[in-house]
Structures are given as structure tokens and as C-alpha cells.
Length: 389
Image (tube, rainbow, N blue to C red; front, side, top):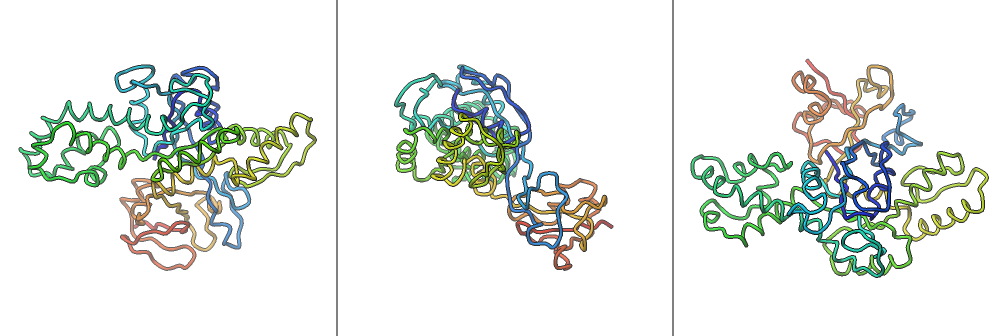
């Protein structure tokens, strides 16, 4: 699973990337600061299973029951109008996000950057909402149009369903048969008569299925942002807008690193524990006011909404011992695995290692001791032992 961080230049994508990952991306105030994609591991926060157990937890990224589960993230070059025709870093951008399962579109909700990412005042942020989607749709449409005759020929010459033929041709975009089937509302004979309008509609539906978008409304601490955020929600009620200040999150993480505050990413507050300068105190007061308004910096909420709402993932904890919840090295609950909702014990085995899946014998719920059927859907937070034969 990969999260793609997208948007025009200078909206705070690289700052957001720094907040959620171990990679320190270059941050600048000029277009294409991120020339090559910054790829790394981000961490989404969940409540750890150790909270409900009478035992501790040996996971490296569990802080008082707040577990941070790794996800792949990619911060790609800023997008500008005309990317589908190769303008700016368009070709690199579109190629970089093709493997993303969900797109996190970072918006400058303050309205202080124009469509090219250059400084301005009172920019209409609603113009940016469909901007990335339209560029990606245009790019995908050109690919489909180039191969449409070939696809129709493939459908005529085989017994395969249309969704299977299309999925095989576009598997490199991270598009599978399920996504194509959900987007396709026509049979083979109808598709023979499709024109550009029908193709455009199909591509748009396909992108929505294969590359859902969440809008991270950055710079929400700027006064003009609140009104802009409200207008976006009114104009696009079907979309998900999450208020966020990546800079506020970065400030808190820096203060925590320096021993000035106690803070865990995603908390709805922080505690000052060190001596502050006047400038630091003023900066933290600004952050505190933001948290009071929005319940946090919004950075973790963006990840949680993307992973658990848009992608409908769950977290499962594989263990070797059902009594102690340990692995083979006596570590308690060391691993947390993200799986699509509806996954089975066999899916978990495949995610752990192909050898375990091949040798799969049975699965056991570690807390109850009861066997779990091979095709039984796992529950979020479940602790599971996979046995091989």
C-alpha cells in the first residue's frame, strides 16, 4: 500500500512528508523543491492492542498504547496546469503516482499561492480541488484512447470479461479487476459504440475507484483559512477536507526532540516540560490555539482518514505465542499489519511471508484461543497466531 502526496508547488507537501516519515525532505519556497519523489515510510496512529491486555508492548513505535503502523508514502514534484501534456514536472509526477493507492492532495487553504504555486493573495482555493484529479484523468484518458482499439479487439477475440481485459492492460497503474468492474457500467456490445464522452466518464469513474483523493487543507492556522475551508465544504460536500497545519506539527515534533514539550503525534494537546525562550513560548501559544480550534494539528487525522476511511484498512497483530502474545524472540506484540477490510487469516499469512502462506495449517485467535476459519474475515485489532504444517 502506498500513499501519494500530491499538489501544486509551495503548499507544504514536503513539510507534511517530514512530519509523517523518517525521511527529511528538502523544504523550500520555490517551485519543484521536490524534483525527484521522496519515498519513505510514514506512520499512521492506532490504539495498540496492548491497551486491553494485562501486559506491556515491545514494539519500537508504541508510546503508551499509541501505536504507529508503517505505510509507504511518496512526496512527488509539484504539479502545474498542463501536466498531462508534459508541462512542468508533469510526466515525472504522473509516472510517480501511478502506484499510489490513495492520493493525499495538499491544498494551501489560506489562498496565498496561485495555480502555479507562486505567492499571491485571496486566491480561490476551489480552483485547486479538481485540479490534480483533472490532470490525472486527462493522462489516463490519453492512455485508454491510445489502446482502445486494441482493448476492443482483445474483448472480441477471447472469452474474458471486459473488466479482466482492461485490468490486464493497466495493471501497471495499480488498477485491478475489482476497480475496473466497479467503474464499468456497460456490456461488451455497448462499449463497441463508445465515443469520447463515454470514455471520459469511464476514466473518471475508474480513477475515483483506483485512486481516491483526500484533501489535506494545510496552513489552516492562517486567518483567511477558516472561511476558505467552510466554502470548500459547502461547494464540494461529497469530498473529504481535513484541516491541517504541517508547520504546527513540525514545531511540536522539534520541541519534543529538544525536550521542551511532551507530545505524541496525533495528541490533542501537549505539555511544556522545558525552559522556553520568549519566541518559543509565543510559537507554542500559536500552536495551542490551533489545537484548541481543531482538536490537533490534523496531520495524523489526514493519515487515519486516508488509510482507514478511504482505503478501508484494518490493523491485525500476528504473534507466535497465544499465551504471552510474543514472537519467536520473546517480543510482545512486535508487529502490526495493515490489511484491507474483509481479509482472512490466509491473507494475513501471505502478507507476512509467502512461505507461511504455502505452509498454512490453521489460525488461532490469541485472546480467546479459538480457531479461526481460513475464510473468516479478521477484525480490526485482532491478535492472530498462524500455524503451519
